[in-house]
Image 1: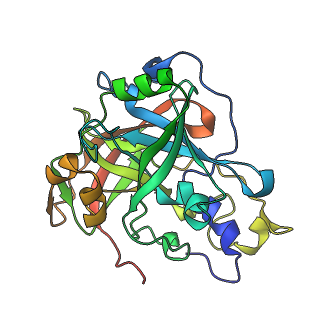
Image 2: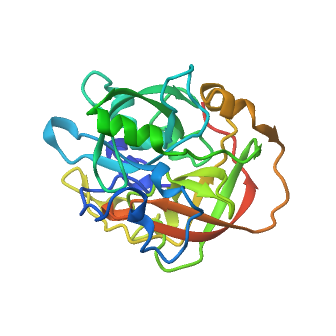
Length: 297
């Protein structure tokens, strides 16, 4: 990991695959956003993968990432299903909820509405979030829809189901199978098995893949801001959906999951749909479960 003295506010945008500056919106309605990707998604998946953004401080650049709807996760009958993203994508809303609204949008960029945080895996701690073993996950619920049409589109999305077995104390070690890599905007993306089940949530690119390398921290800062370019990284981390607080907040979907010890390290083929640079993309990867380091308190 990088060594102090590094401003925490500068470190956090580097860590995730998220923190994307505003990019061009993908053309085409709904799930058709992903049809140009080389990796084909199972039917119905694309409509459940949303855009998420949180405004910057005093009109600064918004933080943008990926979120996804979880099937059968409504808190009560008739309520909208819940949404998962990486906690660091919405860090500003966790730190200043009265000042930073969480906005969700469809794959084609059509606004859905404002969301609020229903649960996090652990209380938000920016310093602990630098560790890939920290539970970097948040559950969102819709606080307000922008229009009846937006609500109808959200409710029509089938949602994604978690894999029925999720390892506790594990990370998914991702190695990209194509040239896209893990680019800003992909944090919060669902990591899917071939049949479309969620094996985890993409939370971090490998620190060694930052331009300039992990050992040259000081030159990355310029007048208090990060000056390095983040090239797409070929490796990264995803976290299974095994945190007790996350499963509890997912209602019936969470109760259908059995947690287990870290399984063997056989490679799995996975897909991660999301919004690198604001564009729809599906990255293909091989993944293996690895024991996660113990989180710092």
